[in-house]
Length: 525
Ligand code: G6Q
Image (cartoon, rainbow, N blue to C red):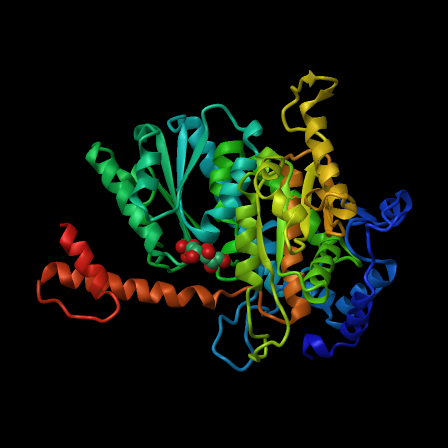
């Protein structure tokens, strides 16, 4: 049934007409803050600053029941074909990124999930042996990961989140853009003799990645180095990159692990294992698995976050959502979430192929705090439209060293700012000077954990994967395909063919759209 026809949606629409005003005296109080929080596996979700009442929360959970969100989550983790559009040509696949990390459980698994889990296990064992050999050889100090989209954003965000845990002399670099400046910048700062290169492409056909692979291979050859001694492949079975003869080692990812959900597969595991060691990698998987299991329980944290997002999007009609981690370690996490959320839920058809008549995924964007406060917070506080904010924070810093300056540590200053922003957005400020008036009633929530270690990072990653999937289940859309990125790719490859033809024959084919571009290019030669 369409989202708008669900009984709870009507109820929620009514509740939204009389939604709470957090700026009214006494509303945003201690009791509200105490009761509007939920905790699990080391995370607290504090949502007193959202524009909800207990009645709204009840109605939101009814919505999730009516949309069978939890049943769909169980189906997904059991390996049911969730990536599909019924009655139309579509990817028709199971969605089993959770099987990449479910080796810690003895619970009964469905057949598909069991097979996927065995496959993941085999790759992990292969990686463990490979890392042991690397440690014995002790030849490599750097690793370059070449990949883009899901083969870059999540793995890069995870790598950057754990720098204090790095093993000495194990640095990782990333090349993603086809802009030659990206590859050149990385190549200029490594000693290629001591560098491994892992090429990550599930399809083995991505233009940027294949181009960058050749770019780096050429540089190695120029230095008289044998690429086979340096290159590792992570790709789909039988893809054009599935050619172990060309690589020092090859690892697999499968079609049931979507690119943006692939950080805990070999797409992220090779670089993370190299930088932080196999046991840290296993801790990430253990944390992710704990969140996977939690996401199957009643009224879980990712579900609550998904429902609050739906409240803001569909009932308060707020078109964007910001995510602001108060954590330097999460510097690239907003970029990962941007892809995870918008590529998954930026959809206009439901899983039966009908165009939807309601809003789906919001524009998701963000930056780390406190830096964001000196950037876009003006608009968040006083702009014409409310922007829901999800803050992420940790009670402790990753490094043990901190310093008291003027009576407080840096970590205390960081957290004080996080809480202050949440209160300021909710309560606002009255002022006779209109320019100093803060309207308040701007919804936000805080996801708080103790310290960002590998386990917590894995759980955080999975929290958002499930939040996004649960929203998709409630909207009844397919959160696991990405047809919207295909058209531009096809056109770019057609234009490249024309460039090539134009280069080899002066009288190459004439074409409408690119003619002007070609003229400009040729004129510059
Ligand atoms: C993610 C998308 C996309 C993909 C990249 C790279 O869900 O599918 O971002 O990860 O296009 O694809 P390859 O890994 O196949 O090179």
